[in-house]
Image (cartoon, rainbow, N blue to C red):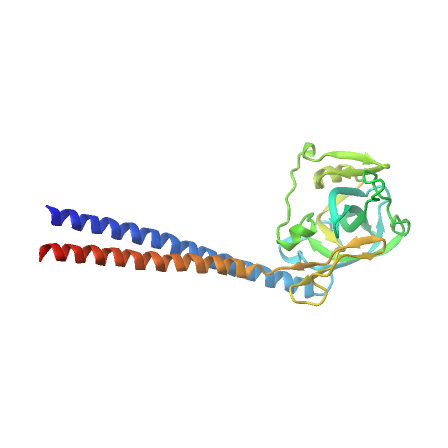
Length: 274
């Protein structure tokens, strides 16, 4: 009877150890696949950034293939369409992020453009800063990067394009110094305030670079009256590979521990029988 109990205990221990090892091994495989996906995403976005600029004639782009492409368009910013996104910082100073509608020349659609940041006046921190006079209106050439949707610089660094709720109630709207200040950016709410259709993409004029390229990770600088912080596309592969290594390491530990426990149990059984 004791021999049967010992054998059953060994079988249970073996099955439990192997089950946990299979689980951790599969988790390691999952992290490996995620690393491969992130590597492919990084390479695709890096290639898009290096490709020739596009000048879309439509407000609806194939974002699977055109995201992170450089864009060049002539046109002008729509007066009265600027929206400030609150609670931003530039080098530790309070700021607002400026989103303004741009109308390409000869087109019947508008593009939401992330123009950068404006610093708040420390003496009047709750007053919205004015737009730079030279940038309020007039023909300009838009040079920037196509994004799938609105994204903050911090989210760009994480390759996470924030999907904002379509519910207008999710955005706190305020008016400061005659300027609309929002707690967040809502493309649906923004489109309702525009005289024509809004493109399905966003353009940021803040510089973007691949990790390791010159210009990546620089501090904010002032361009045409706006503060802009260069954004680097991180590859994010090493993180997933590190997780995979941990899971594979845990798999090896579980296999070794299971083998040692069974070996010790079998030796004890053998000693009792002698």
